[in-house]
Image (cartoon, rainbow, N blue to C red; front, side, top):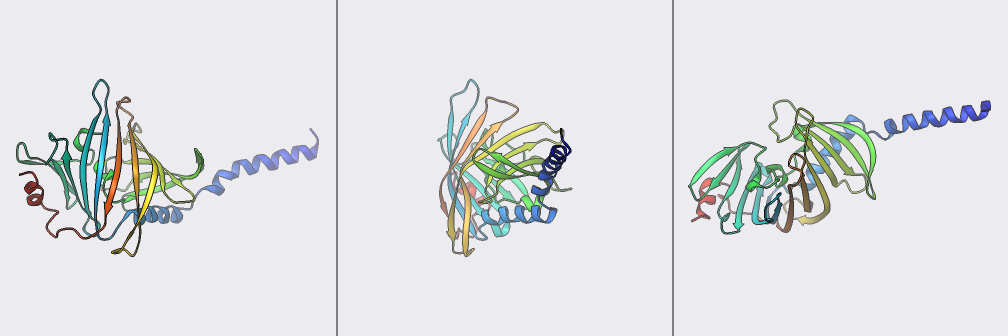
Length: 260
């Protein structure tokens, strides 16, 4: 190899080694990106959605559930009320003061649940229906850029802030560089074991009068259980209503009244 060719090889190798660092986001840029993701999904007012959950489990018949999701983002309130099938109708979840409660009308009892609660026995969790709080709950580190299908994505590893109660303390996130939509999310236990993989194939936006800007939401979320490999859940968000809800909706009494 000539000196000229050797020099060219060294320059190329140096460029390749420095490329990932050049593509990595600075800490302030990552925090800003997470805040943008949160803000795009937050209404600032009220939120109502009709959702369908399709659950697949090994050696079981696929189960489809229908539910209404209510949010009041200004107060961090969330309610999930199941309407179908008949055996699930009236069951629900209520998030109040950072506590998650479940209600079963068959026994008329409320029980406090953890963030890892499987919503209605599916692979979904509370955070899949709630407003995004990534910037509030996690500290990001950049993994540079990568390809995910046809998309170029920012890759980040998020670690839960100390004292914050989340379902999974470690998240790997793929964010579309062009649209800022989340494309993929992997969730890990503190031990490093992968627990769930989530894909977001379709996003949609809706103008919010209360916010004075668009609100983005995933039309479809595909959730894969990484522990029970045969299990998966598809969440379909069919309709969104951003008009004001009843003032007393986010109460145990209101949910109980829908079960009578």
